[in-house]
Image (cartoon, rainbow, N blue to C red; front, side, top):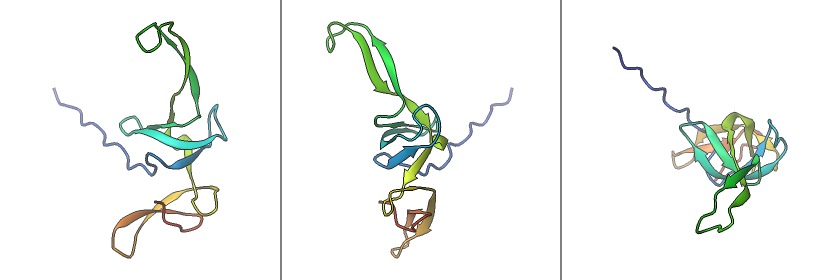
Length: 114
């Protein structure tokens, strides 16, 4: 039997700490910072977006247990980076800067994304 090759995860255009806008799904229009990027799944967790209710058993941290509201992951394709210069959603490109290093660039303003 032949082993199947696993697909390499795509080069993601967003990173932890980026300000993004949700452009599709139940949380459409919500803005927030990226808390975590799940590279293998192509998803990200955005602060305050895609909130779900998680039922928890009693434990040392929460003696009564109960229902906790938390963020669930959103597919990367449903997120758009906010342009640091204009504050509107933009696509992301890559260019070499003056030092010759490859950096992310906002397509709308041409501004480098830190």
